[in-house]
Image (cartoon, rainbow, N blue to C red):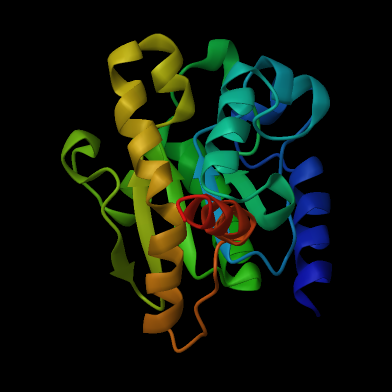
Length: 214
């Protein structure tokens, strides 16, 4: 089975999953969006109100902020795969419970294995704890570490900046480092580095500015 077929099968399985109580209140499951060949995989916490209505991750206010962060990092949603540690909305947007995390982990692990991303970016403490149990996000955010055959970068959840404005500079700073971290991961994994699209676009302007000095 190809990666695309595997991702599609997981989405089908998630849509009818009854492994935990979250299925009782869901409108739509949210398996995740993105290409099965994505180099970067983002893992959030759980669907919210809008995600439960539409069946897609990060479509509310935090999703709009995530789009801005991705643009800053010179990537788009079409470049990355976005998922959550739980695929159905916890009632009232409460934190996922241990049994819910366990029930959904089989789907998330299957997605990671199929996509095989160079970098996994965890958004929030629940997805961070999957890779760094017991770590404090305030101490490790933005720091890339190798876990198994790939690299993992814990980051604050975009929603955190909407509730705590003081965190916004840290989130912006972490995402600004992402393109260089991806190239660092590529090189470490024996893959070729790439030049950022934005740098290619900026190059002519920089050259014209230099010429105007003479």
